[in-house]
Length: 114
Length: 111
Image (tube, rainbow over the protein chains, first blue to last red):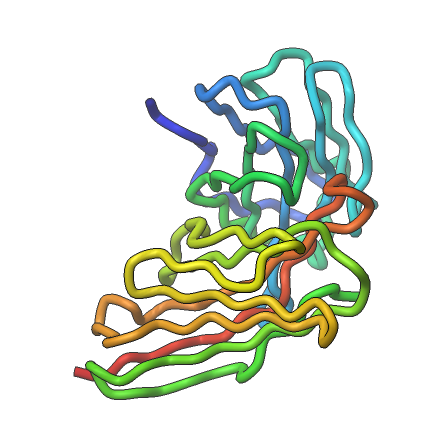
């Protein structure tokens, strides 16, 4: 199993550009989520999904969109990039909702917005 | 606001010593988890402890949970240089629909 994969590993955007961060998992997990990690802040939940077709907002959803058309994929879209979105983004999946089972994390995408 | 807060923020010990990290949280939880993150990598799950459990062990790791004090501790015994990493506690709110991480403890194990 590849586990949770994320692409790209690194990305530089100019302010106002849009892009999609890709996330895929091959463990047939229903629960998937996106976090951002900033220095000294730990991880903050952006959006999550409890199954195909179902998404919801986390703690910091503004400026981001998600969709879940399949169990495997959970892309994160930045609509109009801002310097405040410079961060490391992690995708995670789990067989159960957030706290009831361990989460498997991808390697992360380091995004810089200039 | 963050549900979990780790203490200390940074910890430096010698190889072979024990390392203890603490996590405090604000509201009632169903589960608490500990994760490790090596520099530049994703998080790796260490232990999950449920609200009705008081202690769990996994190899050199020991986790305790005191729901009356809303706190948990992670003990790493006989630490190794490879244990150098950041350690995070994470708690669920709203029956697990929202999973919240603390800011982490940076552990340095010196050879």
